[in-house]
Amino acid sequence: MGVVFPVTGHSFLPSDKVFGTTERDLRKMETVDNMDWKAETRSFVKKKSAAHHFKISQIKELVLTKMTSTSITVSGEHYYNFEIVQSLSLMKKDKGPTNINPTELVPGIKVKPSKIHDVKTLLTKHYGDQWCAIDKLKWFTEYT
Image 1 (cartoon, one colour):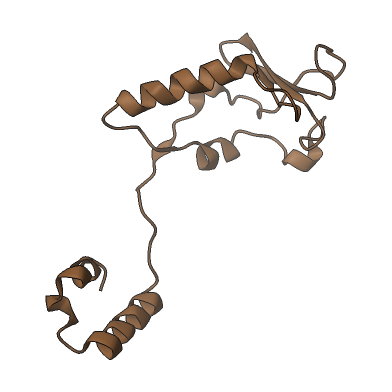
Image 2 (cartoon, rainbow, N blue to C red):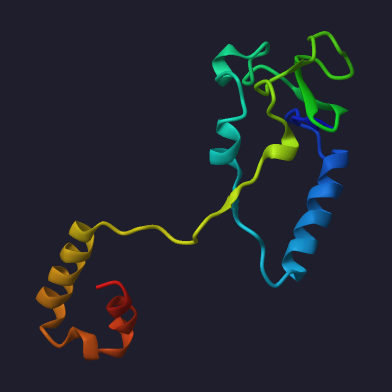
């Protein structure tokens, strides 16, 4: 699988069709799984991005190659249609893509108690103690 980073001035890339198709299919889905891939894969990668055999900020093409069912190699190419950089695995020994089991992310952001207190104080100050009874402010009651 290759990931091509677009160059300014190009109006259409083959990946545009893939992204459009994916977005259309996602709109048709009732629910989309929201999995925490980043946290799960952190324990599988053997080094930080600064220590990779390529600089992620300077590449134009990221090439992922499936070698076996448990091995994927990665190379970052500085030029299009060239394979100059050596393709190496970023996975730790005895860890492979089949071992990754991401957890589901819980939607929403945890609001700090101090923020809830501040909002409650502001609502009381501007609307009085009975602000909960005002229709346009009802949705605040869920958080305070």
